Image 1: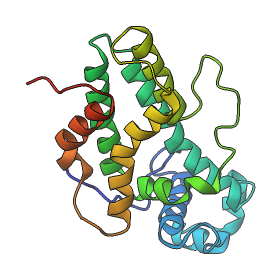
Image 2 (image 1 turned 45 degrees about the vertical axis):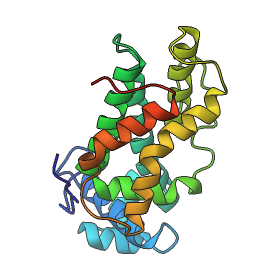
Image 3 (image 1 turned 180 degrees about the vertical axis):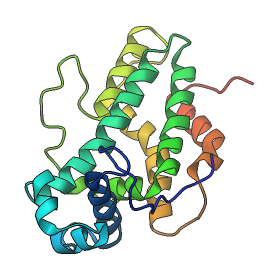
Image 4 (image 1 turned 30 degrees about the horizontal axis):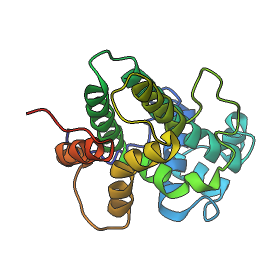
Length: 209
């Protein structure tokens, strides 16, 4: 999949494309990604969105609420993607391939949003504080549950699933962070095979020929 920056001013994050709310979300995620949440005002977001500041407040209580909702949107999407992988019945290697491919495609499809996610997740330490129960509340928790199931089924040796999940996710997230910092250009999807083999290695598995 070709990388797309999506500076289109009317593409929403959670809102329907073309709506005023979508324009506000797109302006905000672009400005937050470039200048940080603290370096952006609601006035500048409204100006870039081509709407009044009052209209922004009709949709979002304040800037922090807007920033959190944008982060929550990508957070949920990644969590649900890993849960979808966990539902596949062809084994852990297939599940890993699904996750790696979709992580890269999600990032490439809207790099501005993913860049925001990479740079600012630490600003929202309580994003996943709600008890998980049977429903994972973060990509990390979803990965933990997937690996726990694999351990119980004897696909991989038993170990600390928390550490293992962090290591596996880091195979893709660390290169994404390096890209944010300018270490390389181009879509993450170009490196899917390398990422896939690295995650399988972390988990003690081999990619089938």
